[in-house]
Image (cartoon, helix red, strand yellow):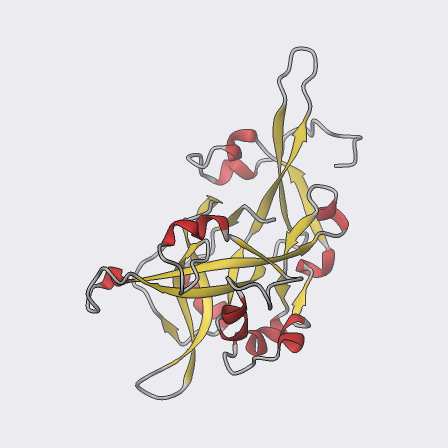
Amino acid sequence: MCGRFVNTTGPQDLVELFGATRRDTAESLAPNWNTAPTDEVWAVLERLDRDTGEITRRLRTARWGLVPSWAKDPSGGARLINARAETVHEKPAFRKAFASRRCLIPADGYYEWVPVPATDGRKAFKQPYFIAPADGGLLVMAGLYEFWRDKGRPDDDPLAWLTTATIITTRATDAAGRVHDRMPLAVDRADIGDWLDPAHTDPGELRELLHTPAGGDLAVRPVSTAVNAVRNNGAHLLDEVPDPLAGDGC
């Protein structure tokens, strides 16, 4: 799975990187080295512009953890932070979004954990690892988004609508697979237009657009257990530490 990630790229840089022509929020998210479920994240998507009738590429914020439009309340979103690529096109919570509400979620990289057994003088704990493209480039994670309507609020209430998103994952390979058996999927630059296009609805063709991040060329390094607490944030979380599992396959 992908349960925490890092994104430090600002909105203006994201607009330029992805060729967005519109920014749907004035909100500016601060760099986040410990993005957790229910946090607000940046999402790149394409929507119909009601004024012009054209499809426009947009940058907006979304809460991480997808809430299906038919959900009675948004409380279950925290459990839907990931969608499995193998079943995303058929699961009730994801299939409508996969058909027409796909997005990109940018990241510097993501975290995964490996349990470290107790030894004499040391309690068992979970060792975090930071996984990112080896070339230092941006990780363009494939995602889905949804709109949920709070029927208890009037139509003109800006809080009546909640935008949420999930990250698509697959079986991990290469370096990432040594740490965890799942990993986020990415979309190649050349395929971004097809992935975001809401008119592109063929499930088979869409799934062919999903790829292993960085072609599998990922760097993995152990980082401080300070990452384990969501209240901790800052660039120091990415500092490499001695690997307690060195020699054990990680």
